[in-house]
Length: 274
Image (cartoon, rainbow, N blue to C red):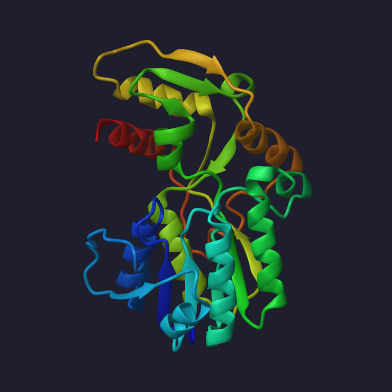
């Protein structure tokens, strides 16, 4: 039985945050979300406590985190200073478990960690290992929804971004499954202590995703393909594949069931048609 009851979530209003808040709240944890005191956004989460904080004030963060068993970061990993402050304040406040914003690419691979865009992820892990807290790192592969909106394709303009022919298979995760993985890492706190875990909703290729997108296009447009050679594509489809990332290795522990190709196709179609 997990000793974790009180969970604070940072980055709750970002891309991943709502899915994490929903999953953690529905699992029965007492949820607090951190919002900047300067943030005037209207929060739509029911049944959660809101703590207004200043990431520039360690005392502000420590006060908000006292009595919390776990902190989950869903912040954009580029907010290094804020996440660093969050780690330091959590440690000082006596938080037991910290889940950093390490989702996505596997920075335990030296070549991946060396990518400038991703370097902050490894630095946060270094801080956690030096702290008195335990931690869990979740490697999820790219988020499916994010890939559809920002990376795999610009479906609104019928432009597909293809890396090396589009037939390389990698692990991807839905936002809902990332939330589920967070919950189960907290529920199984002993088994997940100080571990990097690998989860995935599906193994798929860019071409399989693009085929579903074209099927979903009500206008029946042909997709214009663009070959990409950017650092993110080379990291996902080059460095990670070469290193043999064990996508989905810990799915059973984290309560994740891989979807079938047909189920993935329908997920893509539904997202594109939203």
